[in-house]
Image 1 (cartoon, rainbow, N blue to C red):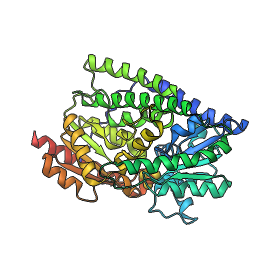
Image 2 (image 1 turned 90 degrees about the vertical axis):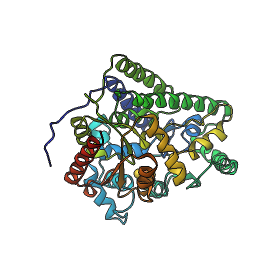
Image 3 (image 1 turned 135 degrees about the horizontal axis):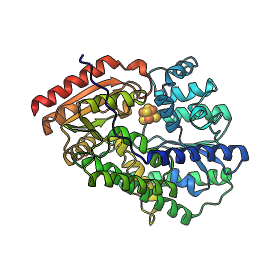
Length: 414
Ligand code: SF4
């Protein structure tokens, strides 16, 4: 393996504003728990956050916390603790890292934001659109704290979204309302829901705009930037703060484009990343790709927070559509067509598939997709074996060597 010089990508200045937004997000949750108001709802990443905001809850996303555990490389300490009470090392390492952290009475929120603990939930609200693990994850806390657990059960492997898919999910959301009213003490108000959906729509449009900067040559941002700057789209969608933030970020990215500033100096190759980030290795991977003058310009993962369907005129139906139209919910033919489009529009010349050991739901290389895409598009791909949080499943040396050989292969293709 040739030793590559370390090259950092260019820092985005707006990150300072994002850090203070995130700090306020966690502090507001902490205040809510201490004061007993507003009530705190835990929500899965594409759960009904719009409904929860509209009903006056402060909303917390444990997946964001679990990713932070991974990024701070604390996961390897915590996963075995969850394993020891019967949660298998083969299931979602967000779940095992988060539950293990709870059982260890530790959280990265202490170092990052000075908080002693995660915010205790008044209600836990999941959506199985992404996987079954989220239901089991939230069930742990429901038993632990004896708090209500409610959820949406979404169809999976969907080819085309049908009216009956939407009607089913709308009925499930409406059925949650009496429970949520009782816990929050806030009466459901359709106009408040419309306003939240409007804010989510605006946020999602701006987030799409951010990601579409990746199509510019050279690209002003990378996948590694996007995994950081997506945080407001994940935890603050439905709130005005997220909108203000993305306007600021877009101004900075537009300036970069005007001045021809590349996130990766001397960009030679443009890749698409499919699958979960490897949270504990983002910096190392980013440095390796930068040194190889290769930019990962687009990804399935960061696109998962683009929800074109939101419409304040039909809040329930459009929320249902947004939650089902999601990539992870869809069948292989949809996934292939979706990726083809982004790869073409972003002038991509190679694809990385991350096969995450503990997340089959976000590992799209397992049913022949790389081979079908190579045949259709003539674009090579590389599969990296690893995991989102469990670094025991990732061989750094093997990944580095394979990436290097893959880029050489792209060089030879010209
Ligand atoms: S989709 Fe994957 S990473 Fe996300 S909660 Fe489910 S199993 Fe975990």
